[in-house]
Length: 317
Image (cartoon, rainbow, N blue to C red):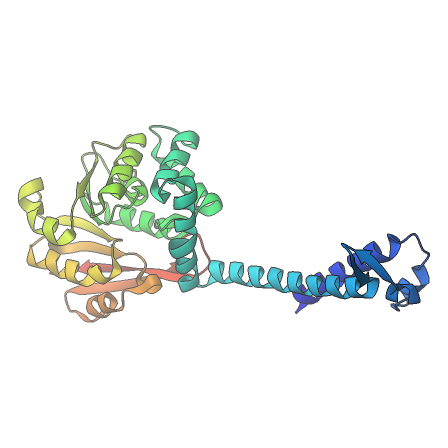
C-alpha cells in the first residue's frame, strides 16, 4: 500500500501543478486548499471537441492510479522472482530466456560464452568461475550450481580429494571448471551431457579455462553412457559423483551406477537442487537406504534468495 499511495500522490500532485499552472492564472490558493476553481469547468476545444479542464484532471488522475498499480505489480513480480523458486524458474526459463533467444538470435549458453570470452581471463579457471557468476548475477540468470552452493561443492571436493569424478549434467561447463580447478595432479573429471548444443559450449568454456586435459565431456543420455564407462574410460569406480541434470533422473541413474559397479565404499554423491525444483524420490531413497549415509546442506537457488539445498550421500557398499 505504501508503494501504491506514494506513486498515486506524487503523480496526482504533478498533474495538478501541470494543468493549473499552464493556464497562466493564479490558482495557488486553490491548489493549496485542494479545491477546484470555477474556470476548470469552462470547456476548451481539443481537436474540434469541447473538453473541460476538470475532465482532463480526472483523466490524468486515473492515469496516475493505473501507473501506480502497474509499478506495484512489477515490483511484486520482481520480489517473487528473487525469493520464490517456482516463480524464479518460471520467469527465467519459460519467458525471459525465450524472449532473449528471439531478440538476440543466440541461446543463453552462447550469450554466456560470449560474455566470458570478452571479460574473462583465458587459462585462469578462477577467472572463468568468477566471470560466469558475474554474468548470471547481474546480466542474465542461468541454472549453474552458482556462487552460494558452489562453496558447498568446493568444500565437499576438498574434503573428498577425489582422483576420479563423474558429473551428470555438464550444461555450460561452469561446475566442471569449478570442480576441476580443485582436483589434484592426475585426477580426472568425466562429465555427461545429453544436449549437444550445451556440450559444444561447455567444451569451449573448459578449453578457455585451460582444462581440456583434465576434463572430458561425453555427449549422450546417462542411461546409454553409464553402462559404457568402465570399458570406454578404463575406470573401475568413481570417488565422487556430482548430480546436476534432470531431477527425475537422479534416482534411476543412482541405481544404475550401483548396478554397473561404479560406486565403491566411500564414494561421495553430491546432488544439487534437491529442494528446488526438487528431487523427493531421490531424497527418500538415499535417506532411508542402508547403503547411504546422507547429510543435507540448506542453501538458496542459484543467484536468487529462494530456498534450495544440496544432499551429500556417502555410499556404504
